[in-house]
Structure formats: structure tokens, C-alpha cells
Length: 254
Ligand SMILES: NC(=O)c1ccc[n+]([C@@H]2O[C@H](COP(=O)([O-])OP(=O)(O)OC[C@H]3O[C@@H](n4cnc5c(N)ncnc54)[C@H](OP(=O)(O)O)[C@@H]3O)[C@@H](O)[C@H]2O)c1
Image (cartoon, rainbow, N blue to C red; front, side, top):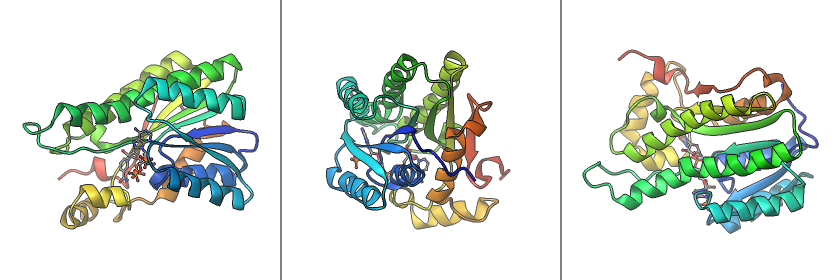
């Protein structure tokens, strides 16, 4: 069990709620200083920071739309002033804008690609500049992908393309940034989450659950356990991987 991230400086994008919030709280509970990124939900991000601080942790909120270069640059300038650098980046911010391809608007496409893929590129670029300027050995980049990077889902061409791109970005950067920085993606299946309940019907979730070898949906704490491992020194030899965390959902024959 990896417990100690004292002295580590972490940015979690999209940490005002959901998986990102759990990751931010988990790192902070283990001694890291955590930048809690959000786009719109300032109140929720403040709530996350207040909770972490009340528990004796160290965190601050940073607003930025990860899909907009200038905002990402501003966020990293702020982070550099407040934390002096960065050891661990978690690209978690992600959205869905589902529609059948014939009805998908250019905005549906652009917003999802900008948040889920370009956002990871922009954050990786700025994080790598910070890590390299400090000559950090042991930098970590972890991105939250989805099984739709490997399998199709109807009405989600934008989302599937964004997550497929994220896995490819992960491999490209792992090759480019080693040794010194590892880059990995976690390929999530069905999670027990408000987002899954918003995107899928009860019937779709029940039928997916019946097909998952583990027999249930995933929990946020299981994501943070894997992120913690990938962020640790123990995972120094693990890079360029898109690691499934899906209860075996993707490997099952019909
Ligand atoms: N939940 C699942 O079942 C599931 C399954 C597979 C993969 N995933 C992936 O896991 C990640 C987290 O999912 P989740 O369920 O925790 O999502 P969520 O509850 O909807 O939370 C999304 C977070 O991303 C932030 N965000 C959205 N657009 C942003 C932007 N342009 N810039 C910065 N932050 C932005 C939101 O902040 P604001 O509220 O401030 O906008 C929020 O904090 C996503 O990448 C998602 O694709 C989730």
C-alpha cells in the first residue's frame, strides 16, 4: 500500500467533483500539495479545498478550461508561483456530448475533443516544461481514459475519438519523455458514478453489469488506488501503457 506523497506537487484536472475530487483528496491525505482544477464549479472546488484543509492537508483551487491554451498557461503560471513546480499531473477532466453522427454538431465534436484530448496535450506540455526546468527525475503523467478508446459506443463518435487519441498521446509521450517522466493512461469501464448514470439508462447499466466478469461497476477508490501506484516510485518501469480498470468488461466474448 503506497501511503506517502509528502513533498510531491500534484495537479488534478477536473477535481471539483467525481473521480478527480477523489484523486485530489487521496493525494492530499497522503501528504501531497494539490492543485484542484475546475472549469465552472468554483463552489464545489472550494468545498474540496476546504475539506482537504480541514483534514490537515494542503490544496488550492485553480480555474481553467483545459481546452484553452491561454487559460492553461495562466493556470500553470499560478501553480509555479504557489508550488514552485510539479511532480505529478493527472489529466482527468472529461466530458460527453452524445449524439448520433448525423446530428452531431461541430460544437459537440470540438468541445469534447478540446476538453478530453487537446486539454491533455496542453496540460502535458506545460507540466513537462515545469518538470524539465527542475530536472525532475520521477515525473508522472497519468490520464483518465475509457474503454471506448478500444471499443465503439453508438452516439459517441466524439468521445470515442477523444479517448483513442488520449491513449495514443500517452504512448507518444512515454517514448519521448523517458527516462525521467513516465506517462500512462487508465482505461476505465463502467464506474458507479453520476456521469455513468447520466449517459446510460438503468437498463443499459444493468445489462453491462451482468456482462462484467467482476460482477459489478467500479468504485472511485479503485481508480485512486491505481493512480497512487502509477504515481509512486514503485511504478518507475511502467510507462506508455493504457491499463484497463474495467472488471474485465472489455475482454469478454459475447
Ligand atoms: N464516470 C465514469 O463512469 C467514467 C467512465 C470512463 C471514463 N471516465 C472518465 O473519467 C474522468 C472523470 O469522470 P467523472 O465521472 O468524474 O466526471 P464528472 O463527475 O462529470 O466531473 C468532470 C470534472 O471535469 C471538469 N471539467 C469539465 N470540463 C472541463 C474543462 N474544459 N476544463 C477543466 N475542467 C473541466 C468538471 O469541472 P466543472 O464542474 O468545474 O466544469 C468536473 O470537475 C473523465 O475523463 C471521464 O471521461 C469516467
